[in-house]
Image 1: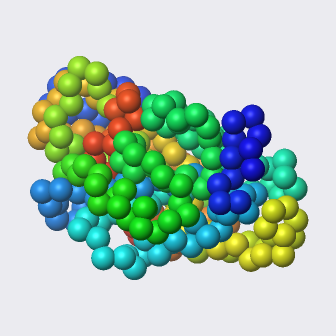
Image 2: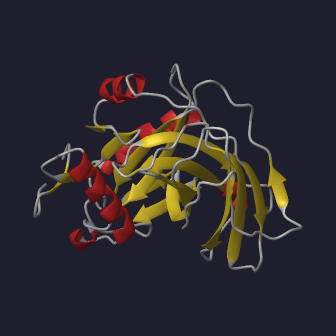
Image 3: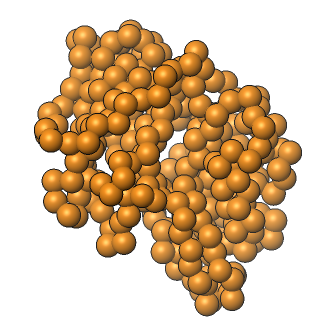
Length: 272
């Protein structure tokens, strides 16, 4: 399915000081980072849509991947971005956003592709594949470069019932040159189930995991060593059905070429 080079396949701040920071608040719940290994997880980003007939199969495959159903040499962090360019097909994806379409377009340009399509996976910001072949997906992940995971400690609090604040402090564990990097924080949700009464998936019950609901920049840093401390705070505006037990955050470091240089995952505290 193609439309204007679209396809549904198968059918902050910067500093060079020792610490980069923004002010947070006290009386929050703290989550310690797990012990860091020499090489951190691989970031796997899915671009999908409930309006694409072949996306549900890809969503199930990525759910299995994120749950650890496959034997891999490296842990993975899965993020699913629901684009909005299939909303005209008769079903408006409740998680679709033009922001995720823009993010996918940036990858299309960085990877020098000819078209935008769903379902598409981008691995570490460096390689991509159509998610219609399990072996191809696993091979793409296996060949991806790995980087040390940052050592952030996360401090969570709810300033209001409609907001979540996350303060992060730690080292990136990768040297950053003068070109700089962005430290990004994604708030995502799993266990989502929707009936789809219209559109390409009419009559289906759609299950979605690792769905990115919010994405914010913690900070931009330049010219720092791998051991220097970076800290900052992001605030998320929450949705009506927010349930902290179904949500987590992913922190990842991304350069101007959209390549991932490290990532880290945190579950939200219970009943946050």
